[in-house]
Length: 424
Ligand code: CA
Image 1 (tube, protein in one colour):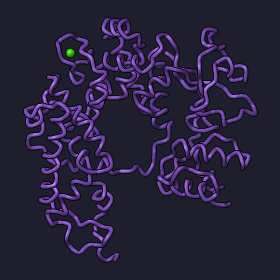
Image 2 (spheres, rainbow, N blue to C red; image 1 turned 90 degrees about the horizontal axis):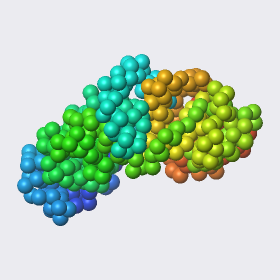
Image 3 (cartoon, helix red, strand yellow; image 1 turned 45 degrees about the vertical axis):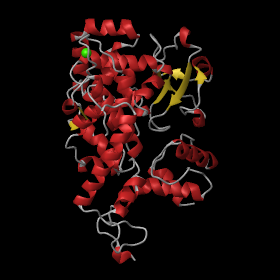
Image 4 (cartoon, rainbow, N blue to C red; image 1 turned 60 degrees about the vertical axis):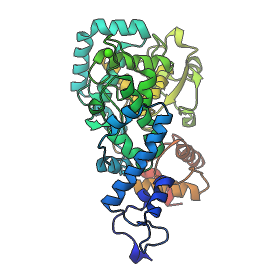
């Protein structure tokens, strides 16, 4: 059978098509060539375009049911075609993820810090009004602006409508694409932006705040008062929209995000996880101390906090609190929240990290991540599947293995750890 396999690796993509599109392909006869049982034939561009046209027709009916006017739909999707770049980006799985110290170096570059400081000065009055309305700290807003779009200068130039239609039609995010495309059409229908000007990333993140359309619909605001919510061209609207989003996500006015800390000898690394929360007072009683030697502010003793080790037990340690978690609502990556908060601290004249990064720990490649998960599972440490993604379950399995092997249980994967598992 292997001789019949298509030469291009398209199987997963074809099988991920919505059922009604597969049905359409079968009905039109293009699935009838001699093909292995488990493999669909390659579509020609013509049949793929026909399937996309059918999909658009069916999707139009759904959009109208969701309250989109036919006129809005037709003018937004006139002449839209599949975007191959979007399909490729959607399928790509990174070989390596960047080590957190490299990510932070880029995020906290001197240029970005200097530009942010200049923009804080330039927009002092505007930021004052936004702080007054939403209670969200200006330094954090400007840090998010700097990381999301390099202060509005890099917003993505792809057509959001085309990207989302492509994602809705094909690949592993069809539900996401459909939901976001309806939301994008609602934005157009609302009159905020013309379809051609609605640009963003391949995944549909838009404007200076990189909001996806559903986030935009709930959180975007018209702060400059021109009657339109314009996160592409108005930095007042963009900054206020980010503030509105954070305030609705639990931002606590005047509270800090956290501190770099020093852990005591004999510290139990198993408690260093975002899922473990204790009050600052409790951590302090367990001899967790600020790295600069200053005491935690009295008023924060009852705040809930977690220990966060971005690079395992050999790297810097942080005690992170409520506003650190609030930034996770914006982007669910702990490295992202750390970058936003450290950048905000740089604007305030702080934010240098005292600890050193374990730069010798190279990140695991994709195959190594799979091997790690497979070996953990084979040894009785359940990683919840073998997908090459180091998430909560894998970290938990690593910790359990580390505890049994009497290693510091930081849940952090390294080449050394993989080697130990291989030798078992
Ligand atoms: Ca506006």
